Length: 123
Image 1 (tube, one colour):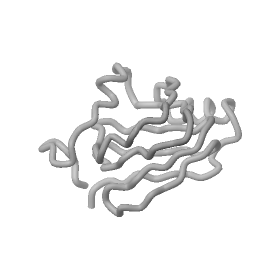
Image 2 (image 1 turned 180 degrees about the vertical axis):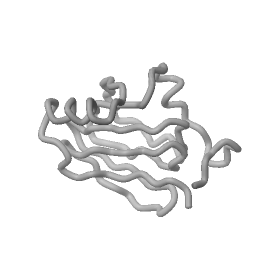
Image 3 (image 1 turned 135 degrees about the horizontal axis):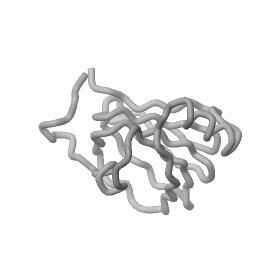
Image 4 (image 1 turned 30 degrees about the vertical axis):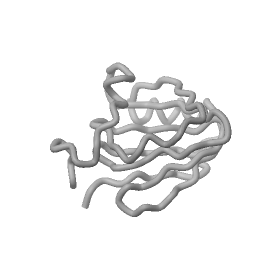
């Protein structure tokens, strides 16, 4: 089975708890503010991504199940490498602390790879 996104609801109560988890995972953090835009279509990334929602509300769609998962402040989003997903449209900006396991540019880490890309891991 292909990897699937998951959301850990009420994972944190603020930046201090997020940073404690970042230290625990060893991932590299940055901040990302997602402005309201139309969803980009189903895609995947070739790197695992953890996102900690700090402000705003949105949803993410799981490409394997079609389920829409709500995201709100305090939630931790885990997107495994290869997990097919779509970001939902929000009413306002959504602020995340986003972490990845190594250092690379945002453009490289968050490249939107199509569902039928031959390098997509399926298990």
